[in-house]
Length: 75
Image 1 (cartoon, rainbow, N blue to C red):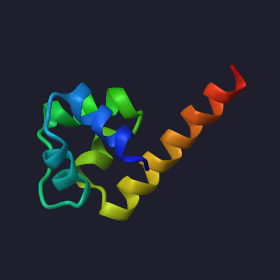
Image 2 (image 1 turned 180 degrees about the vertical axis):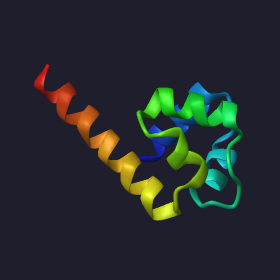
Image 3 (image 1 turned 60 degrees about the vertical axis):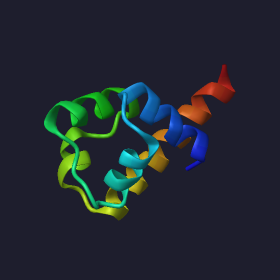
Image 4 (image 1 turned 135 degrees about the horizontal axis):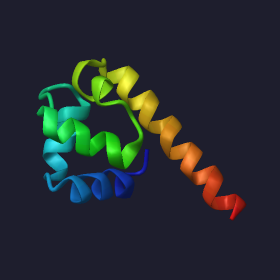
């Protein structure tokens, strides 16, 4: 996933890019409230944000990003 995309997620979620990086690498877990915000922006389940492995989370984000990219190209 492109760094700019991760920065957009961080800005939308009102967290630092470093905090998002810590969540993605599983050094930290998001709060329940943050997981809901992240789910709303990325369409990745809040359960996955909190309990999923690093690999599962990155795969789900890649798929969500690719789906958005495909839909954008069709328009």
